[in-house]
Amino acid sequence: MELTDERSNEVLPLNETILKIDCWINLQNDYVSFVEQARWVINYIVTPILCILGVVGNYVNIIVLRRCGYKDTNVLLLVSLSLADLLLSLINGVLHIHFVIESFDFVAASLIASYAQLYLVSTFSRSLCIVQCHLVSIATERFIAVYFPFHVARIFSRSRVLIIIFCMYIFSIIFYIPHGLIYDVATTN
Image 1: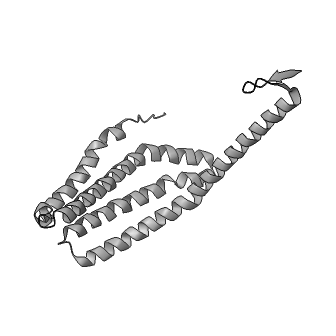
Image 2 (image 1 turned 180 degrees about the vertical axis):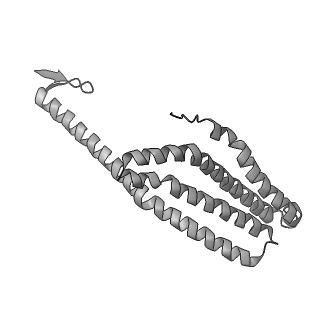
């Protein structure tokens, strides 16, 4: 029995066709194995290390910036960024706990993942939005400081920076209210 290869229009014996299919299946299995190994490394090694470094680094950053005082607008923005990033690192660590528990108890991991999806993902999204707004504010402040150095103190006064920080937090909370309402909690009797 002979089959034709669609790409070359040549007739191939059946055993060569089976060999090609077997090679393709082996490549696919190697890819799946690689993806599983990469997922394991990311969930069990990289993410916990980054969460621990994020918590420790932001905590040290807050302590160091606190000694500088809060009169400078840069310090206000950086302390607020550190607080938001600290919250983001803590939530990210809690969100990845179910990967560790999944190795021991799949049912408990599924339960934790569903609660995390329901309650923590919207908080994670809010924290991520706050961090991104801080980065934009700091970049804008630095841009104005470089290109308009004589006007930066007037444009970014302490009261205006506090209003900007307050608005960033309020904006993210209001903007992500619908995200927390999209899930319907099913209860059983």
